[in-house]
Length: 298
Image 1 (cartoon, rainbow, N blue to C red):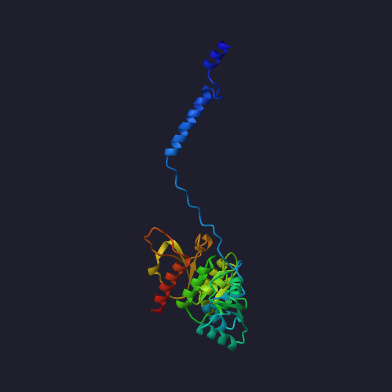
Image 2: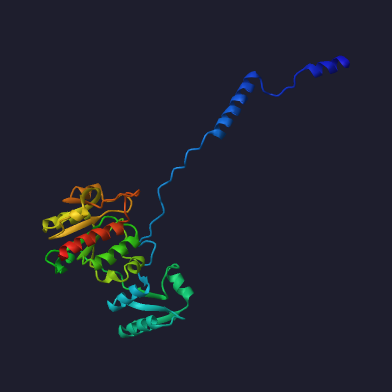
């Protein structure tokens, strides 16, 4: 028994790891040590893939906001008016009187009802049912434009309704004669567009076309000079914006399509010296529209 005990004491314990296994274990341990001391690479920032709101996700038969509803009432496009039941003040009295003048029925409802109708948007206690927006064709836009040297803005697949609304608001202020948008893969006139434009949508003619390429060719045949926007081009303060002109504003993400770029007479650029090398579409459009406006106004 004693001999057996001594043999067991001298015999090494089985660990399940042979010489080769111990080497691999040691190597793994060294790797873990290196990984702990080695700085981790910075995480890359994924592109913004947040869906952009458009006419598919909004009710095109409803608009909201004091200014938007007021202008739509004046133009005769409102068929029903919802006012917040506890709404008071001159604004509500003016809207009620305007609705009576236009024979539009008024319904006073709880705020919760207006929140539901607008998906909790900032409605200011005012929501209206409207007739569907009636777009012009390119031919109709050309025929009804009284200015002998028109200035049109073409939006190449713009997707954000806030950008569209802001552009319409500036277009009205800068005396743009019309805005042209594509029928497919682009935002149309929605409640958000109407609200953001603060009613300018009622004053700026909007043509909706099937093919922007064909539209540009038609405009060129009618004597228009076509201008695009790009990182490389003529500085916008050197832009010769007299005569019949059309300015193309590209998509928020990828700018103008390559096909349209081939049809442009001249590219314009806005010089920038900061770290961010692009501007919001509505901001860029505003700078260019006012550059043209001030020059054309003389």
